[in-house]
Amino acid sequence: MPALKSILLAALASTGLVAADGLNSRAKAAGKKYFGTEVSGQVLNDGSANAIAKNAEDFGQYTCENEMKFDATEPSRGTFSYGNADKIVAQAQANGQLMRCHALVWHSQVPSWVTNGRFDNATLISIMKNHIANVVGHYKGKCYAWDVVNEALNEDGSYRNSGSVWGSTIGPAFIPIAFAAAAAADPAAKLYYNDYNCDRPGAKSTGAQNLIKMVKAYGAPIHGMGLQGHLTTGQVGSASQYVSNMQAFANLGVDVAFTELDIATPSSSPNFGQQATDYATIVSACKQVSACVGITTWGFTDKYTWISNSAPLIWNTNLQKKPAYDAILNAWGSSSGGGTPTTTTSAPAATSSAPSGGCTAAHWAQCGGQGYTGCKTCEAPYKCTYGNDWYSQCL
Ligand SMILES: *[C@@H]1O[C@H](CO)[C@@H](O)[C@H](O)[C@H]1NC(C)=O
Image 1: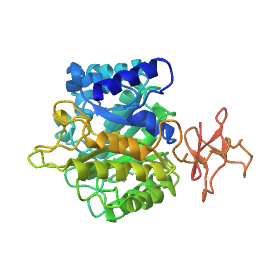
Image 2: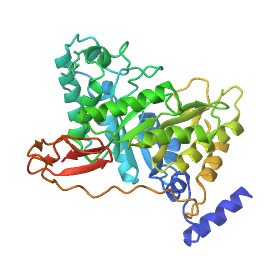
Image 3: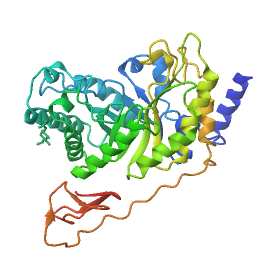
Image 4: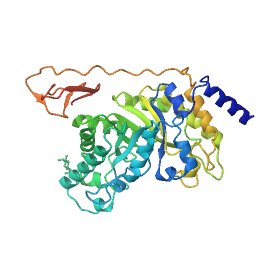
């Protein structure tokens, strides 16, 4: 039966009677930008797994697992290495898949020349800015989004100092400085803060909202909150708590995305039925919030997961679809655009630079936004350009 069904579907598809279908096609039909996956060099070297990753009906977006991190891209000071990441970006481009690029400033996977360098504040800031300028510059125009700062918060929502060379040397100021540097290197990329355990309302989620306000107060652009979504089967609960959490970020004028979704279940005694329900819950929550642009899973097959002794993903270790696959399709809704379309707030046109009090704002500076009282005219030849309701910038 399944064989006959797929032969019939293939025949119908070739006549154009059945639209191509998949996790990404359904997400787009529901009004989202993508459904995507983390991809690694390991996947690229595994032909069977990579065939799944290449299917743009399922995956409209890639995130590199390790290949763009600091230790991979600047293993020694001023020496940049992009070969492994370039291969992933090239495959994405060949298949029309977006890149969410990951991650510029994180306390982990930083090379020892940085962590053991005993650099003073000013030197470490210049090292960080140089890293961002080079890496973001190398991928300019190729990254739909960048995770600029990753995991800068403690569980209570305070800024992480201990164990972070950035936090302990520079203090929280490294965060807006990093966002400003990324914006300078690729003004078109969506710049995200990315963290775990911010998926539901709570102290850490509130801390992330405060971090976003802090970056804006400094005058740097921030466009998105990345909810990593490392969750556990049976502990996901209802969609409503994810909806209200995402809405709290949306109210700050940023997009939201699930960036590293996986839903752990022990490989020795898995509960794939509950796991399917839990995946559907997250998809349904994203579908309900117009600011949720998409979902990325942290890999797609249990063959390549970072979680030991767990089966958290959508394909099993033999690269067969698990119940989560159909649950995600159904949660997005019909492939023919029959799902409830999510409305997107359209951005007002760029405000032209009206004279105000004779002062001018410099290139890259803030020039408008709710609550902003500074100079609204940009120095020539830059124009005050709408970023979001809270932030316009001289570009
Ligand atoms: C490091 O320098 C930055 C930029 O001048 C400043 O904002 C920050 O507070 C400094 N950090 C420390 C720990 O002095």
